[in-house]
Picture 1 (cartoon, rainbow, N blue to C red):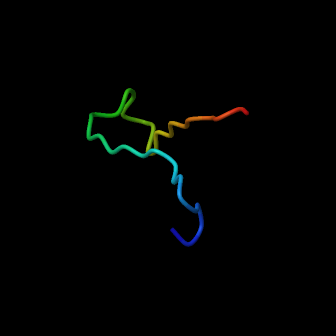
Picture 2 (picture 1 turned 60 degrees about the horizontal axis):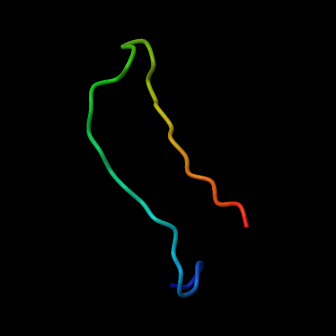
Amino acid sequence: GQFFGQNPPARYCIKAELVRPEFLVEISSIAHLS
């Protein structure tokens, strides 16, 4: 790819109800330490 070369980051997509209805956005992240 243009930005990540031969090893693009993993990605996923899920659909679920919000943990708390007053939260408008939920964010998850994955870190890679080398």
